Amino acid sequence: MKTLSLFATALVFTITTFAQDANYSGPGKMYVKTFWNQAELLKNGKGSSSTVGNMKRALDNAKEKDPALNAAAMEEELKKWQAEADKKLEAAKTPEQKAADAKSSDYNGAAKNQVKYFWDRALQPTDKLSEGELNGNIRDMEYALNTTKEKDPSYNAAEMEAALKKIKDDLKAKKLAEVRQTSGDKRSSRPAEKESNDPGTLFEKLFIDNNISVGSTSDLPQAPAKIEAYKAKLTRLLSMDYTDALIKQGRNAKAHLSGAAANTDRELDKIDGALKDARDKSAMEYRYYTIQFHLAYWDAAQKIFPEESAYAAMYKKVNAGAAQLGSLEQLYAKAEANRIEHIKNTKLPAAAVKDAGLEKVLTNGFNKLYGTAHNVSALKAVLTQNGWTTLRNSLTGIVIGRERSAKLAYKGSDGKCYLLPDYVFIREDYVGSSFINTVAVFNGLDGEEMLCENVNR
Image 1 (cartoon, rainbow, N blue to C red):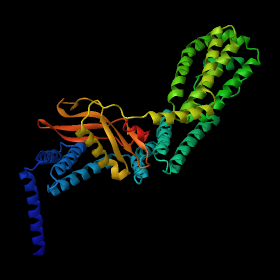
Image 2 (image 1 turned 45 degrees about the vertical axis):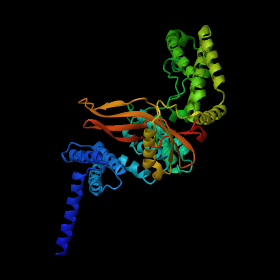
Image 3 (image 1 turned 90 degrees about the vertical axis):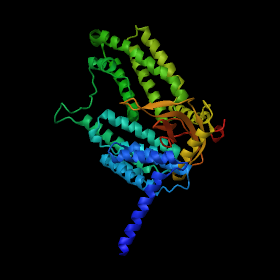
Image 4 (image 1 turned 180 degrees about the horizontal axis):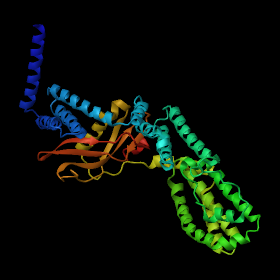
């Protein structure tokens, strides 16, 4: 009897709650209606994860409009569909993605996005990636690791450093094994290049069968040896009688040199940009060793073809570029100076239009999403778009909402100030014949450091 009584009480409560939603006519009525319309879409199998997001925004707006609203039924409904959405999302993840989630799940600091970004790449099976894809992952991981250290100096990045080092070491060992392999299936082996004393072979390696590139940033540790090996070939060729090689291959070599000049000019054109903008050591190292390789190339050209004044002129030009760059130590210092200058010059842009209400939506939305969880706080927001961009369904063309861009400055958990420069929006849904659910949309705490004194300038 007692059990029956409890069941009846629960049933009455449920009916009463839903009845309140159906008969509700308070200040949050529009949002309550929107919530249940979105729930109905999910029940009919026509909704998606974005529909769940619409329900959450409608619920939040309804509670904000009417703090006295009994939202128990709505909260329970949202909880149910959120669990379904999370379940589908989790089921769609690969084992590597699940492992990456586990690596970053316990950390909620300022660099959480970078840590997740790092492990998403670090845990990909390297045997399923091409060398180019693996080198791309290494570049991405280096960037994520460096940015993590900048955003949260207190974060223990030892495990990330060890994982990156292992991937680099494994790739290096694989390359070395390929080079040393001299038996087995020769079609899949890459035997080590033998030091040749044949003028024709050296001629070809210097000017014809040669790519003037240090490779990717992951190849930078091998760049000095690669350049020295090239110089050694020139030294050996100059010690020989290479007349026959010059007669047989000279015209072909000059054709390659002619084409290489444009490539060298492109690399020289990048010097000013590197000196002005590069803010990390690897970027400076890449520019330095690239120019050093081109310098060795044109030195070989002017010595083997002294009759070609253009080659001597190109060598002189590259030498001037190398002098402009300076030493690696100078470039490291310049990169640090660029980083500090970038922080100094990072500011909020002028507002395209001022709207205190929408600016408050941005700052409140940021604090609600990230404030307590990450110990951060919004400082100032500006609208960078005067007017709205209409959003339409890609298939039907039906209006589904509108948005306008913005920027936001915030104080991080480390006490430093940051600017969110990208993917900050005010967004509204189009329901019925009205734009509703005004919300702020962000893409994580991937901010650029700025001086706190610049926030209000």
